[in-house]
Picture 1 (spheres, helix red, strand yellow):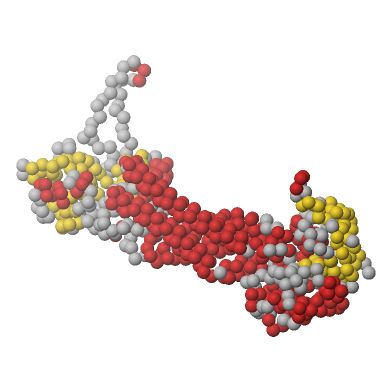
Picture 2 (picture 1 turned 90 degrees about the vertical axis):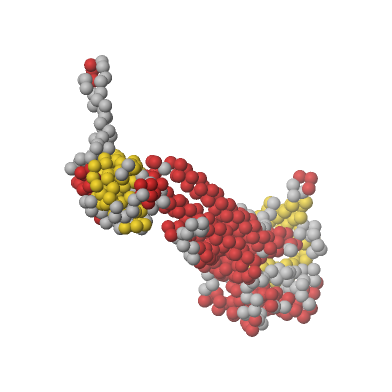
Length: 401
Length: 224
């Protein structure tokens, strides 16, 4: 069908202005498609980064213990012991799982932690805090404290604590000052404020304290085990799949971040749907544009099509010529639009580092190959109707014109 | 001479019911190989319809159409297209060249569309034919850059490209000045003599008809 390709190419190059306009129209449609993909994708990255960027993507915890029954089940009475909320539920076998989880492809960080509740006491002032004990080398593995440290450092040892700036402000604390940390079960340790962080999340900045794992063990009387494993993934959108897989591999409870952020996910889905709608309209515009231009071309070339048929061109050949034109218009317009889209979006900073108030466009999420593929398929589909109309041209009716 | 084309009891009616218009009314005709025949008749007599049916561009309402001993009456569109490409050439009153293609590309179209590509052999034959019709120096001209007479000579070369047994010409000189018309008819006569290609030429022009060895008159849908 090389000859059909030649005829199609000649038809397109014979009227350069019309073909140029048509390809430009397709390219603009593809540009809109890519811009919307990059904007909606970038917005999603921006929102997720801002809201869940500093939390674990998957959290593995010890299964909740049921309150223990004091009488046999068949006794007709149910008497249970009240759960001791001061006693931490611990993963005692976590050490065995950590190397396995760390070796899982797609897992970027694993942080074993002991967490509990306590109070910061400075003189007469007290403030409730969530205490997180972490390995000193993994202090920034989940929440990026290192990037958001405002004073002091992130170095954790057996005698210091890292606090959020809001919490430190409430208690009038500065780096280097001593504060007492009391756990819910009454144990108390004096600790030096080693660093102040500001993550931009009120829950963390005003109510959390990070200590080393050894301090947490002392504070919560947990000489062995950990209370949870926090895991970060390369792709946080895969959290649900990883949670399922890790739960199956270890027999522990694994919760993806999406479980506690349903509203955010709904918002992101609605946003993605709006974007898909706009992209759909851009594609429909391309299809209508290509179809109408080719229909016009078919009508204008009716005598030539009739002559081709009289000279021995089959209906299949005529269809091939017009579908090839549609394909070339779609492919060329798609490639040009994708190129322009990439060039226009590249100067925008990535959403992870986008300044406040800027457009969170993610050039990586332009969906260039999808845009070119869908546009080409759309143009092929758009050319089928004109191609069939061309193939049905009756040579007898046009030769006499 | 052997029989090339034979039509028996050919009937062609346009429309149906009250609007039915019979154009060919049981026409019988035989054309031998190597003939140079003129098809004469007043407007509306059925000349063009007959030419169209002989060219396999239209099917008769009834009757039989044979060419090269093949019954074309029952052939489907694809078979007719292939048959037409291999055995029949056309020359129309309005040259009907492809305007965006050069003279050479127009000439080799029937071969290229069959082969799916422009072969070197096809290009060589196309050049030879254009030389023969006196347009060796216009091969790379676009069809739109040629005069009326030149276009018609390109159309003749195109009609001969696949070495057809029959060339159907519908008023081939009707749109040309006298000098160009004479050149075209001389060319047709020469090809007919040298290659024994059969020509059936529809014309109103008695002078053109006299050049042909046989005159076929169509009157009111049948051969008179």
